[in-house]
Length: 90
Image 1 (cartoon, rainbow, N blue to C red):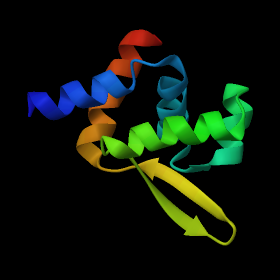
Image 2 (cartoon, rainbow, N blue to C red; image 1 turned 135 degrees about the horizontal axis):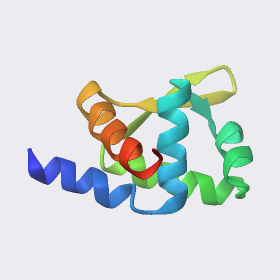
Image 3 (cartoon, rainbow, N blue to C red; image 1 turned 180 degrees about the vertical axis):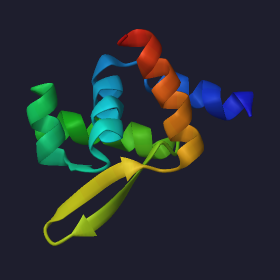
Image 4 (cartoon, helix red, strand yellow; image 1 turned 90 degrees about the horizontal axis):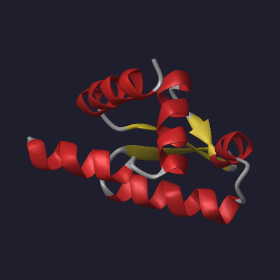
């Protein structure tokens, strides 16, 4: 239980990944272009952050037409991240 939460917290310790996760919690799902605009980062940089978040099981992608929309994987992860976001962004 603590190992999974520690992995999640380590992954979101990066400001760009934290922003991605915060936006996903607020919007349910986003495509790379939505995240790119939010972060002011290039598409390859955003893709690297997405890869890291997917690698630890925080987010998942679903293709819709030409775009892949990303969302948070499970409710436990959402709840853990909401707690962190409430503390960091009161």
